Length: 264
Image 1 (cartoon, rainbow, N blue to C red):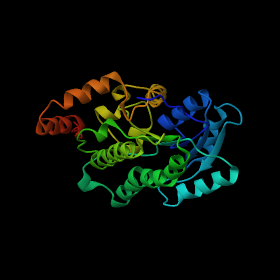
Image 2: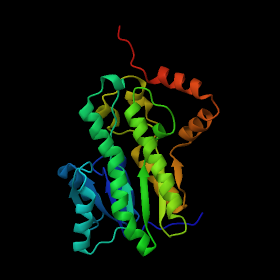
Image 3: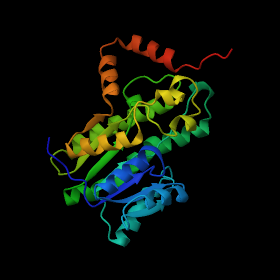
Image 4: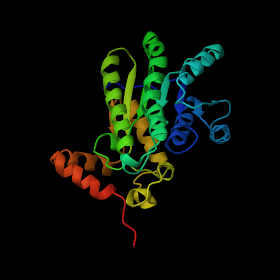
């Protein structure tokens, strides 16, 4: 695998907290200027303040809005900025039986987790291919590699991202443009609070990595030229073991781990 550079400018979506903020800080420390994208300006500005001076651009936006990527692209052209790296990290989860989920929230999840990486990749990939450099990091999840009962919408959305990333990596092969699909496991972020998840995966003890560890692995995997990377040795071992089990066994095991716990 050919080694890859980070380039001069990176766009990071979902950069206001968690893995996105850690990725921005890691990229900044590596000498890459960052365009920070998320809905909350104050949180973005706090992340920007932690980066080297004059090495960031704060861009408050809701990535689920269809025109958000093209609007940023136009603004970057006006500023003379050519993004070398597009880190598509924005996303959230919903916990509970699908039959009880709020349809509007499901729609928002699909727009954020699936539609936005698809459209943002379509917006920025042509310029990278024309220049023959740069690339895309799609932040998926180990939940996109295994069944996720009670996280059905989230798991399915991340399976979409995994499939998209692998396909784009194949399409871009030999062009000088790289595509890395990243699959973190449970990490110390606000994900489970947003998903309103109780039980074992909703507790701090479930997290096996910090956002900073995920970010460090991401940069290593990118530089090594990988197209798919599962973060954390524990997660890699678990995913390898899961592939050895019959699908029905894996489904039942996932249900036992993830189902809501009875009170009392």
